Every structure is written in C-alpha cells, then in structure tokens.
Length: 276
Image 1 (cartoon, rainbow, N blue to C red):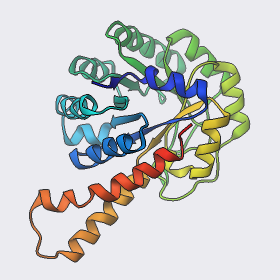
Image 2 (cartoon, rainbow, N blue to C red):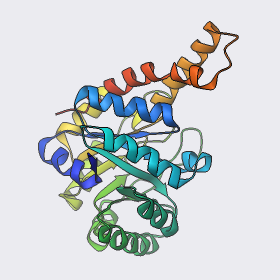
Image 3 (cartoon, rainbow, N blue to C red):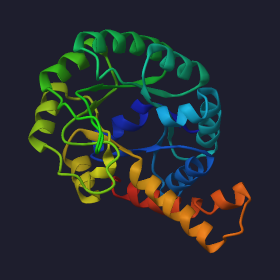
Image 4 (tube, helix red, strand yellow):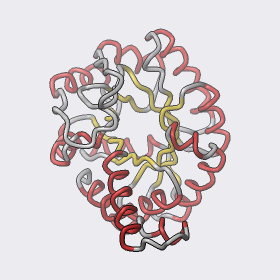
C-alpha cells in the first residue's frame, strides 16, 4: 500500500528541488491512466477530485476508486480533495479516506478564510490527513478575474492555520488551453520569503509552459502543479479520433478505454518535466 499524504510527497520535493503533479481526475479511465503514468516514471502523483468531478460522482465513490489505485501502486499516491468549499466537504472526504484535502476559502475575507482553514487543519491533522489552503484568487480564462496573493497575507495565513501547503495567485489562471502570460517570479520570491519553509502550489498549471514548470520546481518553493486542462484536451482529442475511426462503435467501455494510452503518454510527459 502506497497511499500517501500531501506532506509526505511535498516535503522531499521541496527539499530536493522538484515538484509533484496534482492531476485532475474526472473518471475511472483517466485516473487509471495517471496512476499507470506514475508507475512507469517511478514518481509520486496526486490524484485529485475537484468540484466538477464530485458533482458527477459522490465523494464516497471517488474515495474508494482513488484509494484502490493508490493501494495497488508501488509509488506514493495522494488521494486529494481539490477545492473543497466547506468544512463539511472536507469532513466527509476525511471520513471516507482521502489522504489530503484542499479548502478553498479564497473568495472570503482573510479573517474568515483563516478561521475556517484552522478548523479544517485541526480536524484533518487529528486524522493524519494533510491540508492545502489558498490565499489570493486564481481566476479563470475568459471568466472570473484573479486577485494576486499578498505575501503578508500569506505569512499570516501560514502561521495562524498550520496548513501543509499553500496555493497562490501569481499570474496563473484556471482553464487555460495554451501558454499564459507567465508567472510573476518576484511575487513568488516574496511569498516564499514570507512563508518559508511552506510548500507552494500553482493551480492552473496547464497555462505554465513545461520549461517554466521545470525551472520553478528546481528554483522555488513551488512543489505542486495542478494539471487539468491540457490532459482533458488529450482526452477529448483521443475520444474524437476513436469515434471518427469507429463510427459505429457504441460500447462505452470500448470507446473510453481507447483514451487511456494517450492520457498515460501525456501524463508521463508532465511528470518527467517536474522530476528531480
């Protein structure tokens, strides 16, 4: 069994200058492909169930499915709740066996974000579960705007919550289908100086070019990149190709299985770009 907590994979990453991919899972086929990619590369991975995934399939099912993959793996696998929106979201996930929870109170006033996060950290740590929080707002491509992370807010959040990792807003944006404008290295350095030795997290990692992800992993405290959109693009392309090549296919398992090999290949490339 290699189920791991977030701290167990991020602490060595921070120390040794690499990062771990937090991959966004939407179903069995992609989750299995990502676990296979981690095995093939001999690297840890974080399997994440976000709000969209949880709207499609409930937390208890996600917990059992992702824990099954983790327990069958020979590399460390974190089963992670992404963007939990309430204490109840996190409580249920912890009770069902997630090894890590991310509480997103970034849209709330800082005092409330800190108070809620501190309660969740206390609950999670009592169960041996790691916690990720967020200060600043990571917006969406073509949608809600970002609000950059203030280093002093980040310092206060880290000290007062005891959180294990901190997601920051430094030019990263969710749902980017191509390279973004680049991350603010000066702001990253200021946040790192204010929160050291806390591991930092980039949501919207698909918009960060691979070479930049590699450099940031080696040179900064960023040691987790959330990767969703670029892998979903791979899934969509593979699915369209399969349906075009087999226009009479109707078996769901047969059709979706064809996406797994391309997803594993794409995930292996992501993992290699973050390795030590």
